[in-house]
Image 1 (spheres, chains in turn blue, green):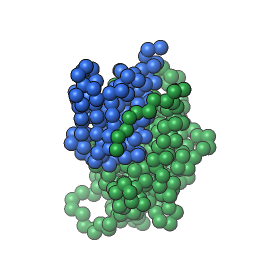
Image 2 (cartoon, chains in turn orange, yellow):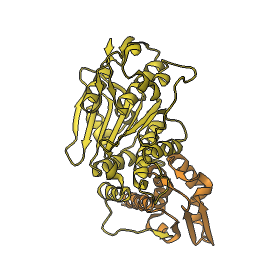
Image 3 (tube, one colour):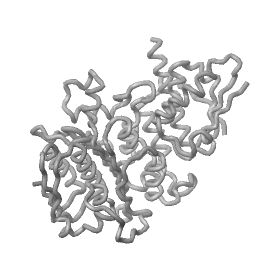
Image 4 (cartoon, helix red, strand yellow):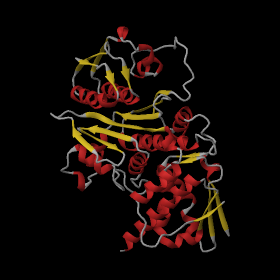
Length: 104
Length: 310
């Protein structure tokens, strides 16, 4: 099973509020990463014009802090503008770094 | 009596902030605007936040000299008089289209993303279209405004204001965000950050500009907003001034930061972040963002690329 999350439907075209992103992650993403039946989680950024670090880090970084590199196998980021792609990769790196610090 | 200087911009900004800091706790204060002739967005934002702070503390403030101030109409158009409570009621003047020139002071509300979009659209007309020539400038403005405004909302516990300006003459963009909250040193000390306990306020501000320092901590805050913003401004060859509590830090391109204190117990009651950069330097914002990330959040030995689909 693939679970697709369309961020534009949830937030509109601009993503800025980290607290909102964190709440969304906990209630709409975390559980699917733990589901054995869920092979892929797609975070669809199609239609998102702007995003900042606060939002993307709160949405993405924690997933990798919790699951480490393994989350890369399940998570797919779709429809990112180049600027947003940089923010997503930054959040991934931050999360993996923090996961490694926790494990060490 | 606080006599507002003739010019509050560039080199005049820091002395003005020192003046505000020195008078911040005055139980009664007269502010004389009679001589003011030129003021930057940072001066406007700092003054508005200063007044909001005095209002919150119920400190008495009397304003004089506005009737003879040579830029009274400009101050009115920039919303200073209304936001400071010196003028109310219906506007009796016609607003010009601010596109591509200046953006009047605006209070930071809940919809930070919309605030950022409104101001970015004024600074970079047409930039809402990612492919347009102003797309990079729009993105830079939106990113910097929303990150700084988020900090006001999440950390300051005060009221915040934003103003901006862009001039064709020198090709610069100026963005200023100020609040009357607890300040960066106050926020980090309250959070019990061990690294800041014995530092001067300007050193604490410098620490806050370093990666992964946040008074909010986990889980929804990584403490990289101010860090990446400062680095992006560096990479654009711009300037960032952060004044908060008893100190200030100015970063200019790749030069060593200039730090200083207001002295004699004077404290700017809140935080001011003033940013300026050339319009042309923001054209490749994506690349600046990438470089900033590489410098501030270096990858480990084996990078882990995420999977991106079109």
